[in-house]
Amino acid sequence: MKTISTLALIITLSFFSFAQSTHSKKLTFLHTSGQDIVNEAGEKIFLKGVGLGNWLLPEGYMWKFGGLGDRPRKIEKVVEDLIGKEKSNHFWKTYRQNYITEADIKRIAELGFNSVRPALNSRLFLTEGENPVYVDEGFQLIDSLVSWCKKHKIYVIIDMHGAPGGQTGANIDDSPNDIPELFIDKKYEDQLVNLWVKIAERYKDEPVVAAYDLLNEPLPKATGAADKYKHLLVPVYKHITSEIRKVDQKHMITLEGFDWSNDWSLFDKPFDANVFYQFHYYCWGRPDNLNSIDQYLNKRNELNTPIWVGETGEKGNAIYWATTQYFEANNIGFSFWPWKKMDTKNTPYSIKKPDNWDLISEYTKKGPKPDSIVAEKAFNDLLENIKIANCDYFEDVCNAINTRIPAKIEAENYGFKGFNRSYFVLDTINKSKFYRTNEPVKIKLNSTDKDQFWSDQSVELQKSEWVVYDFTSLESKKYKFSLKASSGTKPTKLIIEINNKKINFTVNNKDFSEVILGNYSLEKGKNKIKVLVQSNVLNLDWIEIE
Image (cartoon, rainbow, N blue to C red; front, side, top):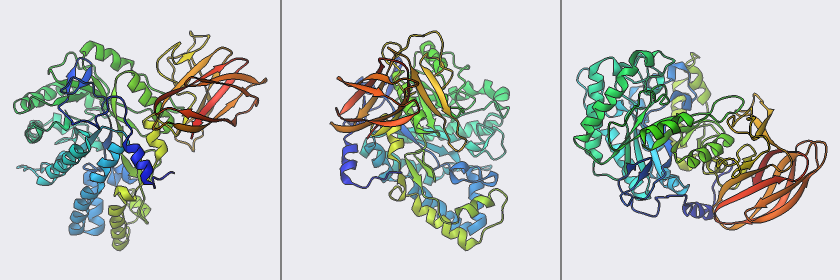
């Protein structure tokens, strides 16, 4: 774990700028233009951000809770059971005030992101029951978020994560009855439409708001919801959009497919002139596998609209690095999920787990009820721990998301520019059995250690074969280069090219070992390393730049 402790590094990060960065300019309304998102000046904007999950819609897995605390309404019940109603109400107000603050938004901008996707729970904006009324708190929280984002030049994509009645029939939308009642009872659709209109009326003249994400991950197949109700999804989208357009003609609208956002078979042609389509991208396979996005690229050509990844993450640095390169090479923006969560090493920030938190966690798994004093202390500690100043920062995670150094670049994460640009191999017919299975670079599986959340892979290259690694440096300076590799039965001669400097190098060990290449200068901005095999065979595990 690495923590930011010096002003110098923060200043350095604040000057970091990626392609189409918005940080140095006044933000203007965004709109779609063919397959691109552009600002009012016609400049292409690549939306690259983070998801503000667990803030306005707490998720049980981020609290390390079991089935009795798997969604907001159940988490709220756990808190009330343990410390009483009055203290519970105070806890939640403070929680929402502390979880995302201006300090978070400032930090997100410093780290090179240009957008956030807050996950909304409709219950924070609209009461449940026979005569629902609007709730000021939710709108005030979004007002604050928008003001911070305007100050720090960050776009906001408003995400309806939990719609009235629920849109999934699962826990992630705070469904009261584990069925997608939004599509069953017309009153919930009307409530959703009216809520979106109210949101649109409030932000119709606010260019910092980039888009309205009408429904998060509707109608999964596994629950049976898709088969029963998917025919209603596009009509609901059209209903919401037509009512929004009566008050707001400026903002983009983003539409998610059914089955966790990823089935786009219902989308035939855009029904609005300022719409883009969204999928979510999680690579949870073991061994690690980089899932193909060809179906979405093909659909983009058919629809001729931008496409965007509303969620990606929840894995490890190898996948993060590859994901970013994959998306950027294909003109797809993304939002990393989530910005922070408890006791983790695979998000930009980690919340320290309070003392005795495991007692509360066990209670949500039908364990014994903890003492109220112990529980209250744990909840009060959580309110302090969620402040970004008290969280742990993982530079390696952020650098992987942004494909920048210092970093350990896994060998399988060569570039995505294709044959003779990012790689050259003699056999282009046979594809890799692992990871990037639609490409011919030979990727070998070294380990599937069950104690790890990811698997260990390497690249095997023959004589005359090569791979190229692309990355960003925040400044012009010298870095230390090392690699982990093996040569097989005979020493392997290499030419390693760092930008325009060629280095002759020999790998002598038949077993994987770490070797230092030396210190070499890099330029601020884009850089690349090319590894060319001159003799025999090379097995390359990773290249580290620090």
